[in-house]
Image (cartoon, rainbow, N blue to C red; front, top):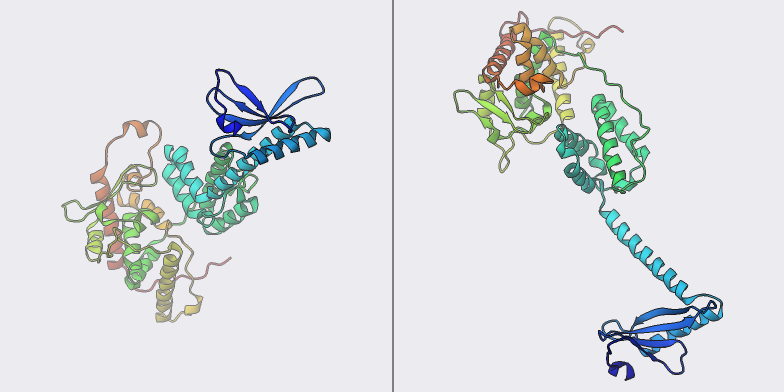
Length: 416
């Protein structure tokens, strides 16, 4: 009753609890009331330990306050300092709460979530930002739901080795981009160690593989046997000389098939600049004959590059063995020299100069980024030149089929 009816004064004052030495209620000018325990240390210093509120929400009862004061007296009797104990308890509680909050945040710090923050904070501001996104999203997909601080060096080695077996250059890019990503995580105190540190660097060796005319002829014959959508996809990949991912992600809205100068616009190409690809008449014919996928902007459904290439190789080998059998050779001895889908792009780039196309035009067909002063001052679009180049390339491919002297293309096992 005394606590409830205590009136605030101009200055703070204390109400002692008779029979419980040291226990008091401090009444503040604001009307706030607080239970405290007061004692004097051996050095004659008066100390006040706050026990808790005496009024309002969460207020201690008088019984609870007397128990707390009794605990403080027992601590003194045992030689401990109640004030020090209180500070230690508060510090430990604060540390516990901070640890729980940190753990809760870390549960949300999955690789997928942190990558989004990394892109916005750093990668998207780079010229290579789109490529960084493409590589990390694709190759670290298996880590998406794992916490970034859970990724170990053994995980990085495993994913790098897996990618290296499929695409050595991609593995090198992954190591560079992944290492920078986790270094960024260290600066944000999300991880303590970079799992990509100490991993082996893949030596980048430029490929020089191009398909011969005979191999191109065999590929074109194989394309005729492929089923949808591999048939149309493989043919457009060859005709346009663009990257696998760009053709695979082609959208109808980016195509102009009805104008006098049909074209395909790639607003999000690898180097970050819009890229216009003129379409040869045969490419337009392929696209206009295709049915659109219901409720999808995409020209092609999603499919694996590995599976597509495996099917192409299967059909090419099938045709080559038929040709061998037709001339009396052993079909089982037929081999096709390994090649990759990206080699079609190099083949086009190598063949075009032989068709009278300037190398500078070829570079623009491939959408290779200009460097140095030319990147700043050369603003010509080369639209007409690119159309002429791709039309000549399409005619060259068509003539391979028309002018071939024989229907037989043989590939023998390479010695050594």
